[in-house]
Image (tube, rainbow, N blue to C red; front, side, top):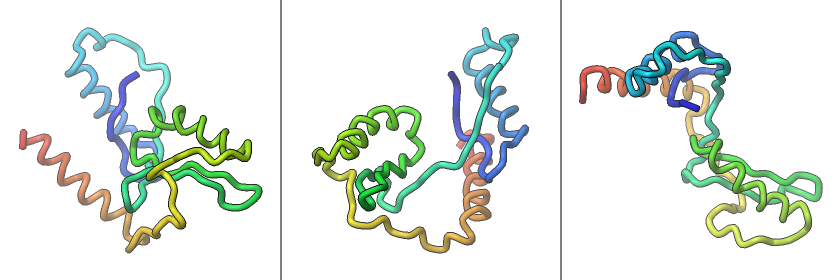
Length: 129
């Protein structure tokens, strides 16, 4: 399993997958001839406080959201808390709960802004900064 930041939009990007493959081979040259059989991408659920949130919205909806780029590792751990909430328990979630998630300011310009900032950091990476 190899991953990293790739596409910064709502669709898969062949150029992002190609860049990740090149990074993988640069880091692990012995994988140069390996066939990649599966790949995926998706949006990252970010919260304004950078902390995941779990809880009960109402009597029918339990949520666990906002893994902030660590969902693959964190979602399995959060599952036990969500199961406890579904079962009617009140697990101690510490900072993982909130009264209400805060909206992202300027959300309509999120995509071009993310592309601009990500492009800048990719440029810095490319020149070794």
